[in-house]
Image (tube, rainbow, N blue to C red; front, side, top):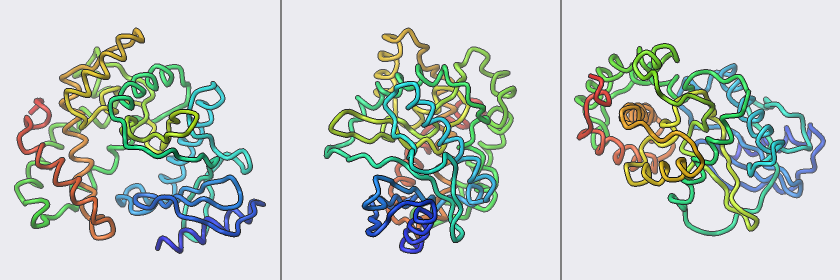
Length: 301
């Protein structure tokens, strides 16, 4: 499947007028990321996603939001990976794959800097607060209802009691998380704004000239706490310190508990993808192991 996605990206790029002689895979997991050598362009082809996000219209809207927000950040002079200026600013369909095209940047070596990344997440929130893009509410959670309905026990990964609890928690959380009005009714003082949507502390690309924000596929409207979901109280304190220095709101711990629970549910519904992505199993075990000792429904139950 990866090779098929690579060939589709190369074909689409050539159709758009790019020279592609040596397409090279840079990364392959939830997306295949291909450097379309010798062109200074990278294609990202989403794969191995929960079923909800594979719908053609859902995928295209999701990709267009990512392109639009990334382009806005770059236009404002902020450090983000730019969409490629060599092709139109829109998703492309080719051979059953939807893809986007980005300017190639040289990644610098090094380990993930979670502390630095958390500080940058607070900076990103300060920047995105001024973004006027029309964004739907908490799109990363849209796949949870259908995912939980179809979820099955997997020995060594999920037990039936885990699934039963997850479904019961969603019953409690659904009215709070599926609409802005429902959320604000419970958390009227929460900070709601455009957010990255997928753990911006590590969704960055370090380069020789600095760190670039990246991977805005899940950009959405929501509480700032969603971007810190699953990172724990120590990194939460790092975020709060950085936010305070910027004159920005700090994390609301009640909201954070709910977002942490929602993040686990989002991860759990990825269980059917483990056969294609075996390494995903370790992440699911870690999240679920922590969740078993967490308050039911983030303390709302």
